[in-house]
Image (tube, rainbow, N blue to C red; front, top):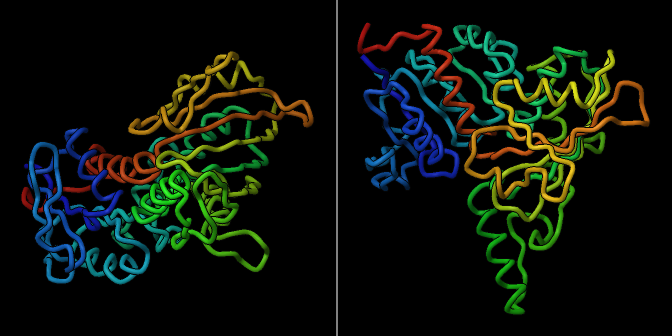
Length: 343
């Protein structure tokens, strides 16, 4: 007997990706339900070679659902995730609403799959921020080997991280530049076409943005609270996939060759690192792929026990949808959740 799975936010970028990945990976679901807001009710979305009609969130009964993949934003999640969880449905939430709740596991399966077991406290499991997910996948095996003490990361984040409207804005602005039309910005504070914006999310009192704070706090919760991390998060005119320039300091010595060898064997990582033109991964090539790609691994000669590297991953997949489905797979494979229908 398989599971009954609901995808909330099924008409959005990440929701559609969740449906695709559930099918691609052969998740043991007897039934998959697409759910969104009332205005999307009746729309059709794809699930493999099938078509699902979208149901309205505010009228749907989750009492017979086993797993809810929630990708409808923090405000909706704060309201609905506890209600859904109270019906006995495990919520895997892609928003920031519950990530720092001490009673909610924050999970990247390649890094801290054991934390999933803590879901019973609130029946909610949190997906990390997209930029954090790929970072900790790359850091974990190196931390196990040489103990990371400090990380400095600069991100180059695609517009899809801000949703479909942001992707449309990049497309519209790019076209406007080529035909000499006025370039209008609405989703972003400045023009994004042929430009970079060193702000993602709102500014905080200390001068960091909330996106940068998320990377710090989430890395500590997922990987190790003793790691010091500072981030600069930048939006770039790329449609899909986030890139990160990562500088790491270790407690113990580790060479670039050792790091390369470790990462080649690490779950979720794929090393593309030839010291020649084109011997590295770019966001274009990572799009549509599941791996966290690592390139440009080299020793930092300015500090003791330091490495620098380039990390790229599809933010809609590993940064969101894939990670959520992998969490659901952990629940099933470790027999932490029994299908209600079977029960």
